[in-house]
Length: 114
Length: 113
Image (cartoon, rainbow over all chains, first blue to last red; front, side, top):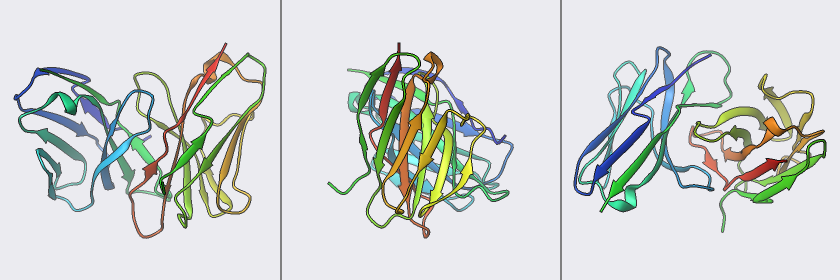
């Protein structure tokens, strides 16, 4: 089983603070995706990273894929209450015929207080 | 709206009843996935279709679960003789061969009483 360990599990911060969420594995992934999920809804894609060392920016969000493609991070600058939600990392395992199925981390519940 | 759609959004049933969920993927997406998500956890893979062929099933998918994609477009997931442990959010996602990016539907929340 290819596991993705996501940390922290919970994050409660004040508006304007910065934060980083980590996603780690001992397995190599072909690609890694970050999603945000609201209660009662499906995950909404934020970004896909496919190249080791890749950095992608989406407004105040910065995503990084580790050089060895075993880990990733999501950094949010100057968090806003609208950033509140469940953040999930998910990877497509590089070994075997996984048919692109995703392995998800446990998720990070982020709460940004005004 | 050209996103993935799922129906129903919510289903409450009594233990032992059968339920069926439907997923309509993004048009022309040939790959379709079903996942299950319980409270406080990330989604877990259930099964995968490439066009109408079911190519992979998780060990999570017991004999009570069956999925179909008869014409390579929409898919159905049926759970027979539901148990309380089946209560979860059932998510469908689709993608095309040229990308790793999966697009998720809003999910069907199943509650088994």
